[in-house]
Image (cartoon, helix red, strand yellow):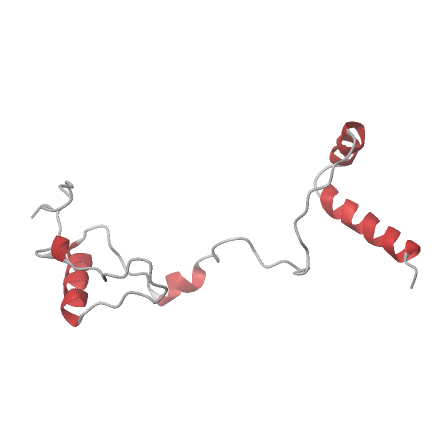
Length: 115
């Protein structure tokens, strides 16, 4: 059957479009479904030809999502303004120029600290 509420062209399992949502839209607590809603959701998932469940081996072989954890987790993003010729010279040194600037600044701080 096709969805009667949203008028989409995808077939849904019977009753899929009639699921109710919590009345508290802006609640910080996660929405919980009734057992009947869970049964309807699972029936819709089972009826979807595009759904598949990966095996344990497939899950184990998947790459982690997102940016990898930094070796230096204390780094902070900032904005700094360089003269155009200085920035061009730094970038011309190739990949990793920001790391080299960070290392140079760390060395400067070590040699110029008052402690």
